[in-house]
Length: 163
Image 1 (cartoon, one colour):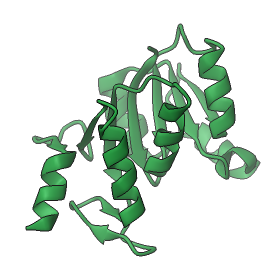
Image 2 (image 1 turned 60 degrees about the vertical axis):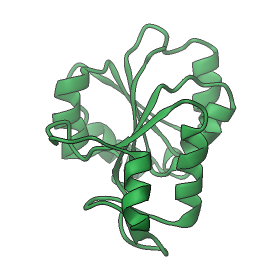
Image 3 (image 1 turned 30 degrees about the vertical axis):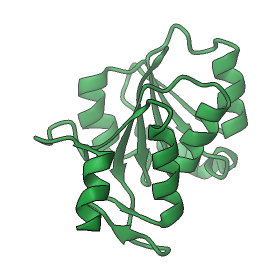
Image 4 (image 1 turned 180 degrees about the horizontal axis):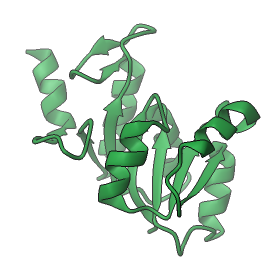
């Protein structure tokens, strides 16, 4: 499967994703999947300016991502898939897109979200969606940058919040 990492990061394309993660993953394509942003030409143009030289960038809707993956459009690419929320990943997985692991990077403490780590706050629906993703034998872990010393698994994050 061409997806080298799937990341949840509310900021999508920014310094950490295009610099630090790019150095570790070496993707051929950055892919942002988001229905709202895929229809906003101004935001798409600004995101494309931040991509590393020599890489491609797709900013597409959930339906287009599913259609393109199923058609084999990215079979020869290494894709760094970035989304704003767990629901999008769940939609992709439920449509048959193979995702091996999910990195939860940054979700802001807003809109009823409660903090779980230094960089991640989630609401009940997002927690539920991550549990559903994990129940499909997909690794869910929390790591802000690839230089972080410890990756924290979903179970540990949830357990720490309960204590």
